[in-house]
Length: 250
Image (cartoon, rainbow, N blue to C red; front, side, top):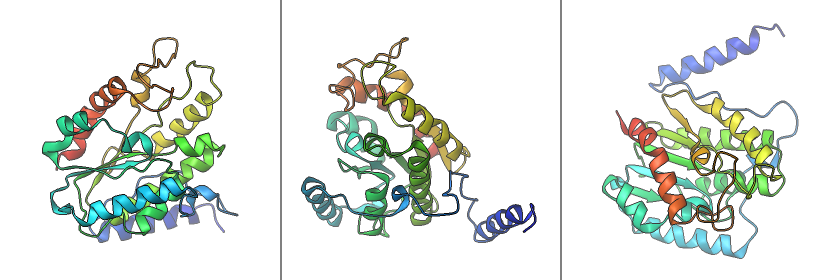
């Protein structure tokens, strides 16, 4: 195979998308040849609590007027736990819809998107995506998690082709900058930034505003140095506001 063959295939794929009236999908990390990592393979979460939360969200979606949803928030417990008053203040008038489920990984989120958690009627202008911290917590390699996030982005672009995606970098974990979780998160976020084309996918890294100059994450921002307090959600909501306004522009 010639060295230019992969480039021709990429150009052909981009041409087909453009011919269909869609911008080309952003260049997220893609699985290399060989066995696929578990992070890109849709699979339900193994916990009863996760299944109960999924069933509850499925029921709520049935009773929701999805045509009114302009912003869909997709992710794990950090998304699910968005402080309700702040969520209403920032997103209530914009038709904000919270699709977060605690414990989600990239693979369980992919499963949810295939199994009722993205009805065809849901066509928001913007999607806020925050996923990957549980994969890191489970010991998945940052390279594999990045591929999983890329698979989620590709799936969302196919389900809601007109929506812009605001991709959030994974937030810091642990008290200090030398916490074992910080380095893989930093590596993951470096790769996730490559998913952005500033047209269909916009990248933001709000976690930088949640730590002090020495990288300390205080418990008044994240009470267990992972999940956010009211102050943490205020920082998060404020940090992404400018990016979200760009994503909502037609």
